[in-house]
Image 1 (tube, one colour):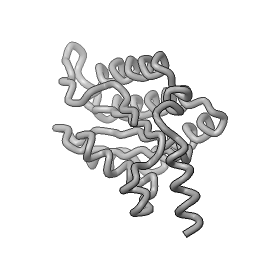
Image 2 (cartoon, one colour; image 1 turned 180 degrees about the horizontal axis):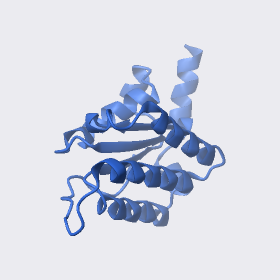
Image 3 (cartoon, helix red, strand yellow; image 1 turned 60 degrees about the vertical axis):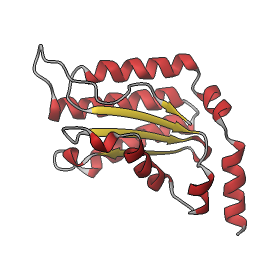
Image 4 (cartoon, helix red, strand yellow; image 1 turned 90 degrees about the vertical axis):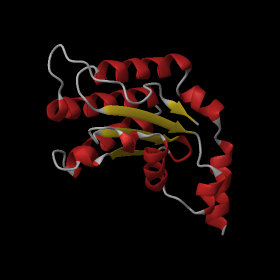
Length: 169
């Protein structure tokens, strides 16, 4: 009970203002521009979601950051891309937790070790409070994987199936 109460208070302490201090509007605009540039090179879709803290229903279920990321993967439409090659990069600021959820089109060509290396890089940046740098590094690494496995032909256009702006909650 004490652990749950401490977690509840931790997540209620963080709100969108804390996210905006960690990632001001200018940083979010740069992240969005990086996603736009990335998606011009491959058929994948990248979504970035930053949550200050877990919503109360998720806290009541004692949801892990991974469980929340998987739920947002569906809620934000990443699971519904035509080629099944969408990727969600998720940051839970209250716990400095990060998750990457990739659709099934990436499960064969990309092994778990590659995703773990991307997460490790992000963790290093986030541990020192460099949230924009960590997200930018993750987008660049995911971009490289998507270009390797789902590059579009020169002159082709990738229809934009999902919004490119980071989701801030």
